[in-house]
Length: 428
Ligand code: ZN
Image 1 (cartoon, rainbow, N blue to C red):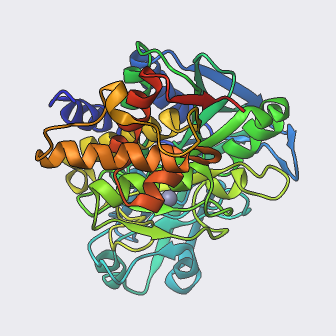
Image 2: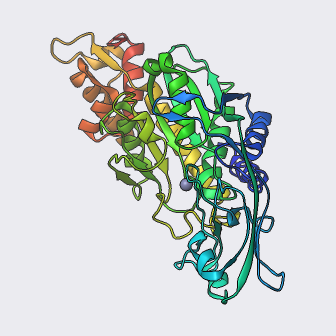
Image 3: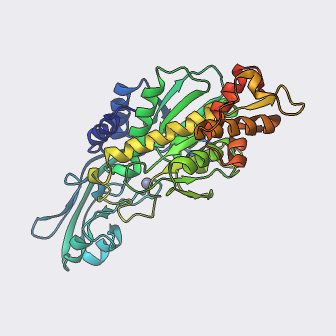
């Protein structure tokens, strides 16, 4: 992979970082527009109030100003200083109040006392501010003026979608959330890796079609699923990309099925390339893999991260800033995701066409008569594994798992055997 793709992803994240995103609104639209400069996503709109399964698309939310001032007129917090200061979807308020009345509306994170936490209240008829623990500790008794100049109105929920057609109508789904305000790892990393990945697929011949979704978390994937029920059966498998920019080792969260094609492909890549990676079982908490894996949808969509959400102290705070993600980590994530998709793409079942005892490999130029070369011997072993297990029931991933030989060596063996007519690919 060209060396500057990590830097390109980091630069794109830097550009997106200051935009004020939420599950609706101008910052989300502008973020999608910036991505549309890199890859030809369509920016879709679902009107507020649209029923999407058990949910309804919320109103759009707009912020003009939000601050708290003490009795001397000094700002305690101001939304214009950092967009995490205001709880997302805060309802408007203009009121003078005492500290005990104000306190229940204030949120801090004592674990990182100089970071501002991230809080949302999409469906609460309430308002709130987030501030550092250090700032909170300095508040004294007295009167405070609170001003939240926000507006909720009938508008739309937006998401970005790109279908890159392959030979087959069967699709791979790549999904990322794009609804968090200024946070780098939890949000922007997934968006920029998905963008770079899509741009690299655009000029490649593909077996599967690829569908990329840039959706506001939860409500966005639910809105997409509800509007595209007829497409769901086409999706062979997929990945949610989230928190893929920090320098920690990779983490994979399995699908509920645990051993679906995507699970096996990720495990194969991790086994050969990422010995320090972690694999976790599915649980109904996390990102949009919850929606894709719900019983009525039942898609095989896992989630790739580096440090897992909720496990790093910077998670959902202002400390998840641009210094927390690196071009090297973004690039490494992209390379591994590309390897996984290569495995998904190349995996197939075959039939040994000379199954009555072992074929005489020397006749086909597949047996190194002089012997000795270690790599040659190893490849011959791979040939024997593929021939021995290609009875129609094992795919190449299974043969790699059983033999302990890397998928790519097994794949090369299968390709060589196919060339000389000893192996035939099964399409069903
Ligand atoms: Zn998050």
